[in-house]
Amino acid sequence: MKRVYIIFAILLFFVASLFIVACKSAPMTKEDIEANIINAPGGTKENPVKLSLKDFDLGDMRSKGCGWFSLLDAIEAAGKIVSLDLSGCKLETNAFAHRIDLCV
Image 1 (tube, rainbow, N blue to C red):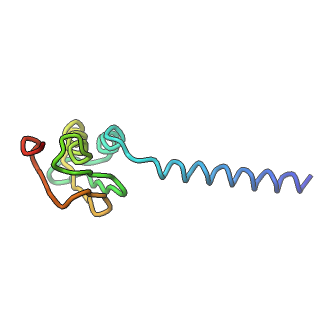
Image 2 (cartoon, rainbow, N blue to C red):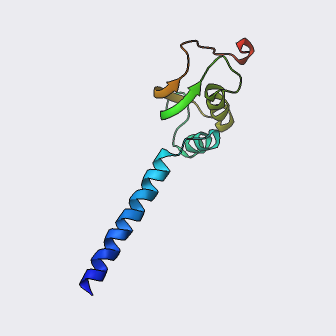
Image 3 (cartoon, rainbow, N blue to C red):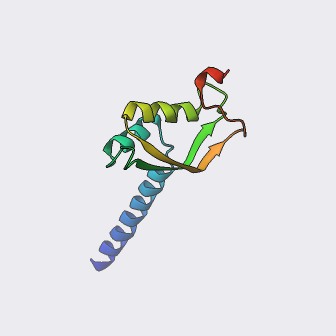
């Protein structure tokens, strides 16, 4: 009987590990980012929400449908001041567009 419990524990650990890996590897969506900002404490000029994005694809910032503008839309929709850490993000080009009217 003890052997059955050990096998069950090993299987449970394996399934839980797969679930954790699958959850961590799922890319963040605009809705995920917006929810994180809304649920985070702070959001004022004196106490901005600290948002660090890892493996987020900013895409080509000159394109209107890129991740950069999705990120800006999520921040605007959340209605809070955010301190961004984009050091872990992916960027397709080194061209930067801060306004959508400059994009193609």
